[in-house]
Image 1 (cartoon, rainbow, N blue to C red):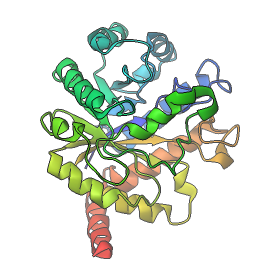
Image 2 (cartoon, rainbow, N blue to C red; image 1 turned 90 degrees about the vertical axis):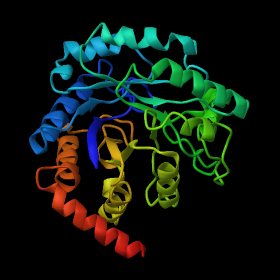
Image 3 (cartoon, rainbow, N blue to C red; image 1 turned 180 degrees about the vertical axis):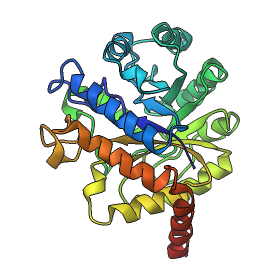
Length: 314
């Protein structure tokens, strides 16, 4: 079941929002306000989460506050990767959370936190244990990123290999499972902290890992999952059939669904991190997804789609 909607992902990171085209995030702010109101109109009880920020930047949150964006959402979120990309140490987690709490009283989620096994699996194992010690009990949702390593044949399309150098390759080692499904040392460590630790796992269009992921998450005791429904993918042939299958497979989890990624044909520039030409278009997409999966009338229809999707899978 959908327990929350997140509006965009890492909007203060150029790999997910092109702020050269929106230098003060005015377009982003208007887009989120409209989308949040659209989500509320379909289901006012559902938490509306401002897209998790990375880096953890109080200045960006102050910008959202000054634009009135925080008046339209009821939760904010942060992402942190202190052993891989951030310029702060892991023990600074409490201070980083307090920087955002000093700006807004809204509930604060950690919607992505992770550590790569790029250097050694033992680093990931230790880092998970320390992360759990620092965060469990201090945020109502903690989503570990991620279950699977990113396959090496799938480029990290929202990243910039030329600019990042070796840091780029850490994206391929964030999972608890290797690309071929082999468990890493951190997998058993993770199961010690569920259900307090949830997972963030992005599924690509028609992702072959979906059913195996569901089996692993149930085996690990996961109850909270964060994933996405891509606005960009919504224009593909058979998009709704894939969305139905994905949401049906995940119906036993408490899902935070993230709406993000601009279709190339709808962006100011032709790429998925571009601000859209029309801020209303993103709100329309959010409304459509809400009506289908989490609106007032979505319950019975979603259950029907779930049964149908399971039947097709056999």
